[in-house]
Amino acid sequence: METDLNYYKQLVDKLPLLKKEIGKVIVGQEEVLDEVIITLLAGGHCLLEGVPGLAKTLMVKTLSEVMELSFKRIQFTPDLMPGDIVGTEVLEEDHSTGKKFFQFNRGPVFANMVLADEINRTPPKTQAALLEAMQEKMVTYGGKDYRLPDPFLIIATQNPIEQSGTYPLPEAQLDRFLLYIKLGYPSEKEELEVLERTTGTYQERPEKVLSGEEVKDLQKLTREVHLDSSLLAYITRLIRATRLENTSIPEVKNYVEWGAGTRAGQALVLCSKARAILKGRFSVIPEDIQHLIYPVLRHRISLHFRAEAEQLDTDFIISKILDQTPVHAK
Image 1 (cartoon, helix red, strand yellow):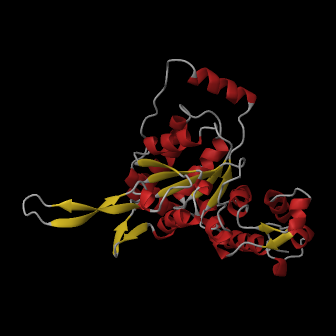
Image 2 (cartoon, rainbow, N blue to C red):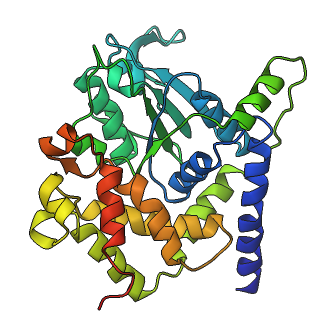
Image 3 (cartoon, rainbow, N blue to C red):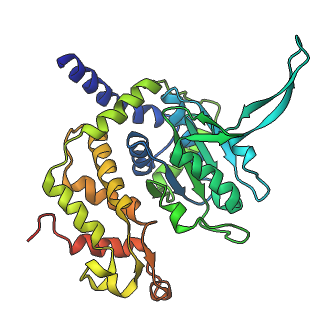
C-alpha cells in the first residue's frame, strides 16, 4: 500500500516537470496548457478556440512528445469524409493462395492524441464520425469494433473569425467536450520571447517525462481524489443555478434560454479533481471549482437573443452565478 502511495506521489511530482519541458517550446499560455492537461487527466476531450498563429498545433504536438503518446493531426475541410478520419476497407490479395479479402486500414483517429484542426469547417456527417469515436472510444466498420488507443484525447480547434462556409457544432455535440478553452493573445513580454526563440537557429528539444501507462495511472488517481460532500453540493447548486426553473439569479432569468445538463456537473467534478492533482493536492478546494466552471459551462449554456443584442456572453452569466452562489448553503 505504501509502495503504491510512493509511486503515485512520484507521478504527481512529474507534472510540474512536464510543464517545464513543454515550456522549452511553448511560451506562456500556462492557463490553457493547464486546462489541456486537466482534460487528459480527467479522461475527456476539449475544444480549443483561438485565432490562427497562436501555436495551438505546436502545443498539442509538444504535449504528446513529452508523454510518449502517438500524435495525429487532421485538417478538417468541407470535402473531408468520415473514412478519412476513422479509416476504410481496401481489397487485398493473399499472394500465397491468391484469395482476395478486405483489410481495414486504420485512419488517423487511431492515435493517443488527435488534433482535429478547425472542426467547424467540415459537414455534420464527418463531425459526427469523430464525435462518435470520442464518446465510444471505438470505431465500428463493416460490423466489427476496433478499439481506440488508451489513453485517448481529442483536441478540436475552431477559429472564432471567418465563420462563412463553416458548420457550427450543434449544442448536443458541443456537450461531448469536457472543456471549452479559449486561447488569447500573448502578453508583450511573451510575444517578444516567441520572436526571439523562433527566428534563430537554436531550437531546444523537450525531454520525455511520462509514459502512456503512467498517464493511465494518473487518470485512475484523479478519480480517487477526495471531494468533500459540501463541495459536491456546491457544484450541484452551481449547475442548477444555470436553469430557469431552478434559479432566482436575474441575469439567468433574463438572458439564458436553457441551462446546463447533468453532464456539466460530472465534468466539473472530474476537472476539479484533475486540477487538484495538477497542483499537487489530493483534495479538491473551492478554488478548483471556481476556476474551472468557466471552461466547463461556457459551451453548455444557451443564451437568449437579448444577450446577443446586449453583447453579453456565457462567461458574463457564469460570473454572476459564481457571485450569487455561496460555497456553503445558507
